[in-house]
Length: 232
Image 1 (cartoon, rainbow, N blue to C red):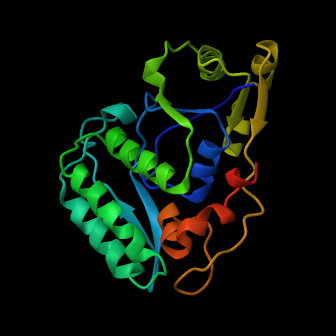
Image 2: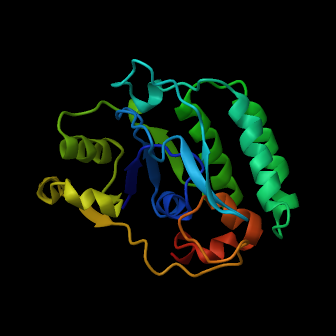
């Protein structure tokens, strides 16, 4: 039995994204999809003393309305220092900040030489997986031949990856044709994002939907205890 998940890459995504990675045997980055502005591909939220704030990577979209995620490029590299300074300003008092900030300094330094959003997201995703002890294989949809059709393409990717089960995000219920998975002899399951426990968090009212960095800086090596993949 091999479980597969397929998602577009996100920038420093929330804990639920990493739970999906940790719950499957192979995670396929589906960055051949169209890039969408004001989405999770190039930004995410952190907590600050003044409420939630966005960390956004500036992307060149002028005249590129149909570009794919893996074609999207950054406008400049000033964002690297800006984001790093924002983390230092808002999380320096978190219990495990000193233990982890050095690794993120290295990541942002690497990103100063990287122009493509997909590659930047991949750098963060793989390093954060290492921090969480997630050993799932991460591949790209470009490693496979893509079929025509929205659901048909997912089915073919799962089959080509040798999978027997597909774990989908819950929002995909609106468009996935369940019968195509059943006809292909594949099990289709949906991620459940409910029931997450709260953890130590700075700045007032608890927020679940912030970047995984919030959990890492506040709980460090105990971060896994507040996620779902470690229970299986």
